[in-house]
Image 1 (tube, helix red, strand yellow):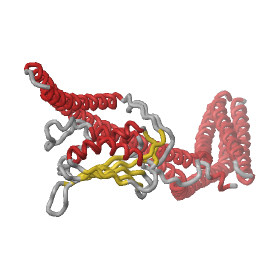
Image 2: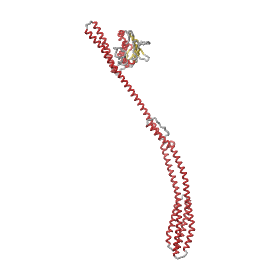
Image 3: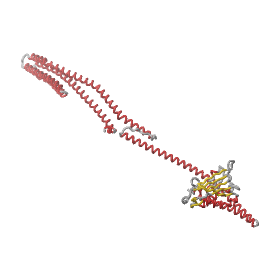
Image 4: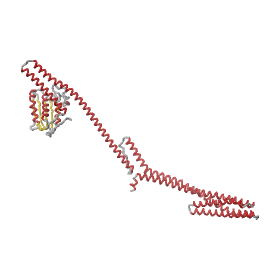
Amino acid sequence: MWRSIFRSLRVRMALLLATAVLTTAAAGLAVALTFKVADDHVEELASAQRRLELLSAISGRVGDYALVALQTTESQGQPDRLSLPRKRVQETFVRLDEELARAVARARDEQGATMVAARSRVFAQMRGRFDFLDRQALQSIRDARDGQGGNVERLRVALDSFAASFGPGLSQAIGEERATAREAEAAMAGLRSALVPGAAIAAGLAALLAFVLYRAIARPLVSRISDVAAAAGEIARGDSGIRLKVRGHDELSLAMIRFNRMAAQLARRERRLMEAQARLQEIVDERTAELRGANERLTDADRARRRFFTDVSHELRTPLTVILGEADVTLRTKGGVEDLTAALTKIRGRAKGLHRRVEDLLRVARSESGQLELELEPLSVNDLITAARASLEPSARARGVALAPELPPFDLQVEADADWLRQVVEALIANALRHTAYGGTVRVIGGIDSDGAVTVAVSDDGEGIPQADLPHVFERFYRGASEREGSGFGIGLALARWVVERHQGTIAIDSRTASPDAASGTTVLIRLPALTHRLVIGARS
């Protein structure tokens, strides 16, 4: 219980304050008692000195009285001449009685009071003898005035008798007062001798008590307060990782615990702020990189579009020039049916090529605007490949290229837009035919890969694609440095990838040019997921 009480800082501060107050009060009380004792001794010494002075005054004034009494008796003067000397002697005895009364009142014990009272009896006897002398002197003066003789001698005899009885008492009283004064001086010296070591011991005890209280209460408190101030300064300088060592269970320890919690909260907030700042910087860097990439893509797109329009101008101008030229020649000449048929055949071929270019441009425009909506439905890949072969077989025969489909014995089913996927496969086959030399072979292979995806591969044994052009073949409007004039706008593979990706599939290309170690050729591989739910694709994001 007591340990829990003394854990409180308020209790310890109250104890420190109470100890200081009690120590101060004790010191003040000791000083007051010392002053009281010293004052008693001083007063006793002063009282003895005053009584000695009064005894000396009594001796002189009694002598004055005796001298006046003799002179008055000899001169037969009036008795009133003794009034003033008598009054002075009596006043001195009264003052002496008052001093004795005060000495009795100051007496600290009964023995001292008895000793002082004994002196009062001596003084009373001395006063009685003086009163007796005074009566004798008055009687001698009256007898002398009445004419009686021998009065002077009788008075002298009385004075001698008075001196014989008064002198020893006076001497005894003076001796006793001197002894009292010496005792008071000795007591003061003893008090002074006792006070010096006592004061030294008291000062040592007070210093020891102050040291113990400082070590036990003040020093730990000041040290912890200094730690708090130093930690607060560190936090003000930005070091939120500082922590205080908590010692004890008092109010200051509780404040230090709260200080540590505050520092931890500041550290967490600072850490979150730094993390947020880092994330913000990462986002800014990412957005900056994206903007830079977008700017580069825009620059590339702008460059590609300028090239595209140049190519469009060339591609459209060439067939139109041929068409117009054939028409003009036919109209100017008067050839026969065979000439007209040949001209119209050439015009029809050029018009079909121009129509194909316009269709490609329309598909590109529709895909760019995001207006394509894929109508997904179950589709047989086997049927798709068979239909594409039938559509392009005449073109293959005209080029002297063998078109060889390879289908598995089971039906391959996907969920796709039949029209768009057919156009992609036909475009890949047509592209392979254009790049395959006479007598070559174009293979269209259907199958399933290890992941269960349906695959369609279009492979040729043409001249292949240079390695420098492979990373760019899927870029829109890219035709490569080796493309022949009139081979197209470079939108076939880009459009094919767009359609395949909208079917949740992938398209990849592998090509090699002729080398001593391997033959040339290009393979385009399409992977489509197995039959899934119907999906409608809206605008491109």
